[in-house]
Amino acid sequence: MGGVAELDRLLAEHASWLAVERGLAANTLAAYRRDLAAYAGFVRRREGGGAVDVGRLTEADVDAYVDHLKSAAGEDGKPRWSAASVARAVVAVRSFHRFCLTEGHVAVDPSEDVAAPRVPQGIPKALTEAEVEALLAAVTGDGPAASRDRAILETLYACGLRISELVGLDVGAVDLEEGFLRAFGKGAKERIVPVGHTAAAAIAAWLPARAAVLARARPGRGDPDALFVNPRGGRLTRQGCWQIVAAHGLRAGLGGRLSPHVLRHSCATHMVDRGADLRVVQELLGHASVSTTQIYTKVTQSRLRAVYDAAHPRAKLQHRPTLAVPSAGRGA
Image (cartoon, rainbow, N blue to C red):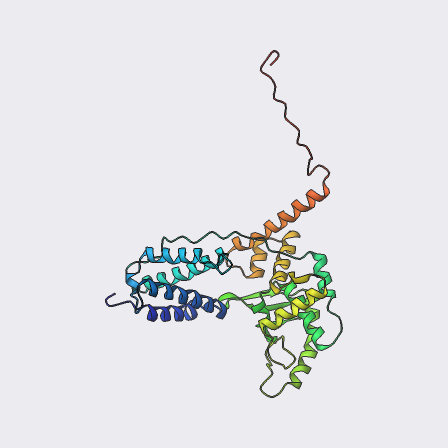
């Protein structure tokens, strides 16, 4: 461990380790890079500029960075970073320092005992089953765009895919005869996901239109592997998919509520509502831990409470009865 543990060199080594050893997705890697670039800038300023020896950083340095993030405010006086953003930054800093310790570059991990802010666990805003039906009915026509959009919405809802998983689907990853597809989730982890009959029928209806779009594509512009393509034959992007879902949400009267992730939430919530085992839903969604999936039980409990309060005549009493306490007098 002799010599100076230069910050820039170790940041580059850590980035390579995240990509190669942990196999993190491109978006996750970009988030780590942004968070650690901000951390590096902070400790450089704190050290007076110039090169920084990671081995000389202390818990006080990391604590000061966390306090800096918590206290930063925008021009309107509101916090610049949410609790979730600060917590994510702490995860990145801990990952970096743990890597430096494990690889033998430093003797101590200064981030080991630094606490991240607690992030309130929100309840996903799932659609009702009636709203999903209205959304799917909002796609009209039999042209290529309508066929593709219908297949996208049906697949997102039926399979609970992340948007990156959907646009990353290759046509060869879908087996309509057996009713399964192969999705590649976070960290390039592969999982097999069932495809319902309605979604399978929508994909089957899209395939001839897809072939026609690719046949018209300019040489070198089309992507013959992609399941979902744009009008030029290229693979549909995350932004393109988001716009498609949002546009049909507006047509269905859902306003700005709809995103691809809402359909993922809706898939999980409706399955739990109908009695699906949490382990099955965990496998379907590709959650690393069942504790992540358990949030959908809170959704179900929330709906149960709302229905009960609305329907039961004695769910909400105007005046709570006063319990009479027996006196300790005669006859007690």
